[in-house]
Image 1: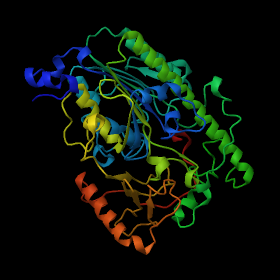
Image 2: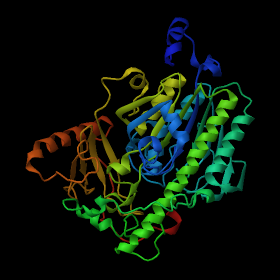
Image 3: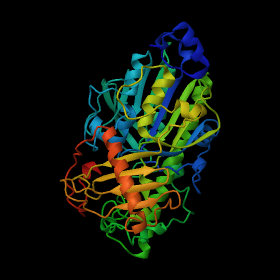
Image 4: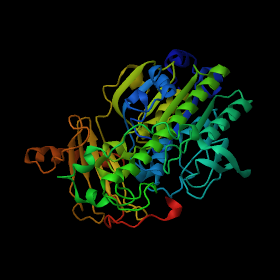
Amino acid sequence: MIHRIYAFLGLLVVLLGTNPAQLSAADRPNVLFVLCDDIRWNALGCLGHEHLKTPNIDALAANGILFENSFCTTSLCSPSRASILSGLYAHVHGVTNNFTEYPEDMSTFPRALQAAGYETAYLGKYHMGEENDSPRPGFDYFVTHKGQGKYFDTEFNFNGQERRVVPGYYTTVVTDMAEHWLEDRSSEKPWMLMIGHKAPHSFYFPEPKYEHTFDAVEVNYPHSSFELDGKPDWIRQRLSTWHGIYGPLFEWRKQFPDTSAAGVMHFQAMVRAYWGTILSLDDSMGRLVKILEKRGELENTLIVFMGDNGLLEGEHGMVDKRTMHEASIRIPLVMHYPRLASGKRIPEQILTVDLAPTICELAGADPMENIHGRSMVNLIRGGDANWRTSWFYHYNYEKQFPYTPNIRGIRTDEWKLVRYPHGDGQPDRHMSELYNVRNDPLEKQNLINEPIYESLVAKLDQQLKQLMLETGIQQDQMPLDEGIKTDLPEQSIR
């Protein structure tokens, strides 16, 4: 089989039958994959944020590829990370919550690159298997920690050989680790390095130099927090929970529920701190680019910067993620690889499951079999008339975080239909939601009960069933929706 590699070597490979694993490191891209936790899709200067300045990431986007419509297939950390690694939906890879370990015998794109001759490493937050900090398959070098890690002074497990607390701010610490790993490499192999940042996951603690950066910026609840007429009742029920704007706000608010006007001050402090953590991410990207430039590897390194899922910042009265609303499912995605494209914006809908096949193709690795994602290489190079115009979203109710129902929904280029199945075959437990996301991107008006859209809803329902069938869901299995509850989650899993 002739392996696919990037364009300017394509003809040479066809003529000579060269095996990509036999090519030199200079002929195949290194891969630097930077994964952030809970970063909002618009929390970058290049994506239009009014207050956040991210010049280093913006430069990568300006000289690389900026994806304008990228999404996660499940807006929850572990399921989304597993989909990024595997190219599969959560119901197939099996990581449907934040407590399940990724199956050891399941393929990943790091394994595929390793088999193709790459040296591979993972540094930072892995976040699959809460109490497991051991090395995982597919990586020659692996450094992580148990649970969420801490913004300051986290204990890391270094490749299964020792555990020790590394003093300092998390983002800086893992960037230091990346620099050391790159400098200590002696192999002539191409390399693939994944960095898992804690930022900007709650609880939000900026680096001291950024603690007061946004003190002068006024932050209010978004208008959609109060525009809940015509929306499902469960959204109102969530307002005073762990995941609502009147709740604890990840412990920024000590007395709750707080529906007072003054309560917005706690929300403001939380958002300012969230933004502050992102400034350190931008510093990290600037450092990494300088390291690659110094090593003469920038032109031949595929850089991927992305988030695992989105984050609600007060939209519809919510914080956290999990729902199918736009702020929850949209993620930032930037690529930089001059040999592929420069200064390009991609408007098509991209999914987390598309990263694995894309990286495998660019690296000349064997394609991963029976996956749900699609390689973006042709789309980036010259467009793809057959690219998806619809996809489905999948989330299962969690007893540990009983603030979000079961969700099955479809998003097209124009429409979004969200269903809330009960879990035992009965009719949906909650009112559905229908939005024209092209004309109503803030999802202000739920159109589900408008008679003129009955035929559209029927059509979207049929498309949703077909999309689910195409990923192997013939009989949909999900937990029972036990309703929205107000109890706080256990301290150890917050």
